[in-house]
Image (tube, rainbow, N blue to C red; front, side, top):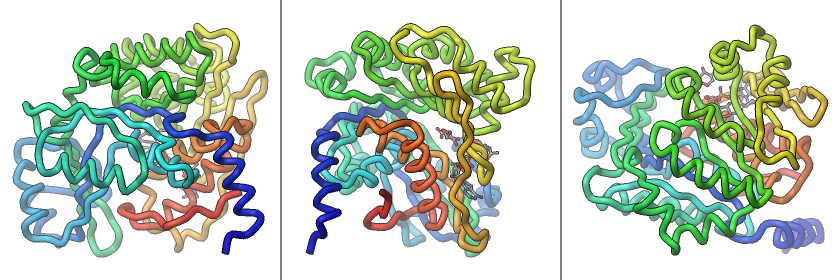
Length: 359
Ligand SMILES: Nc1ncnc2c1ncn2[C@@H]1O[C@H](COP(=O)(O)OP(=O)(O)OP(=O)(O)O)[C@@H](O)[C@H]1O
Ligand SMILES: *[C@@H]1O[C@H](CO)[C@@H](O)[C@H](O)[C@H]1NC(C)=O
Ligand SMILES: *[C@@H]1O[C@H](CO)[C@@H](O)[C@H](O)[C@H]1NC(C)=O
């Protein structure tokens, strides 16, 4: 039986988050998870606790996983994960989260579409037939250590003029109030990001970006700096923040100083001051908000309850977005971010529990 409290929570949610109010765009990958033996790791020269991009020598890995092991499929990719977590936090209504990205017209693409549907997100993929659907092999060994091998394939082929610009797709962008794109997508379609970012800025909506990786701040610095003036909320972890600070000649390694300096970089929409949110694993999260730098301790967890910290960053962002889209204040967003990350690190990377217990 629904309690008065849950009815209230549901009513509030229905008031504040309508379908398609959160928009994400990125690299969709089908996660293929399997518990494997050491022989397989050796055969493909994989190391535990490693994340790599697939090379030619890994091509057969994906088929071998499916043929020889019991695999589980999940809709993956950093941005899609964060949108999924946000939807999971919100629960009802379904399809608050919209997601765009490029996949292939193939079996893995069909599975990905089904998995996105099961996660109750509204995925509108650009389907093309030159490249196969992107995949990420998650090879788990007995002691809960992971080796991730990502093959972007079709995810690299997103095209603004073939998808984003089309009336029937752009309408989903217009429907949203909050936008989130991980920095990884800067390597795929800068023009798509800029179109969405400008739309957000012109309409005083919220555009959020994640630094995503040190190489984004370094190798894709020019692309990043073209988008940054439109960014209302900037996420990153300590490693990424340090790389960003170095590239920008901030001449400081202090996370709070970095947050402050990133906040004061040029911004197009002057009606909102930028928020910068920097995580540092088990240490407190730093947030630059209006004229203050605030810190928020993470939720305590017994180290023996930590099963797998993969995806903690994606979960953090998802939790944050789940509140932002309900127009909650930033400190509430950080609280939800810490909650989501805390739940996810207790689970083996392939799963998350049925229902959240956050309020
Ligand atoms: N060891 C830990 N103890 C408690 N909380 C943690 C721990 N590691 C991660 N978290 C939670 O996850 C959030 C994000 O973690 P972190 O800064 O490590 O992200 P990340 O480096 O991007 O992770 P990943 O790349 O593995 O997804 C933290 O703010 C915290 O809430
Ligand atoms: C931050 O994230 C990157 C990947 O985006 C990861 O390689 C790095 O280890 C993370 N830093 C910390 C301190 O967890
Ligand atoms: C995104 O931001 C989070 C939180 O600040 C960070 O921990 C993570 O490394 C970033 N990663 C990705 C994959 O976008």
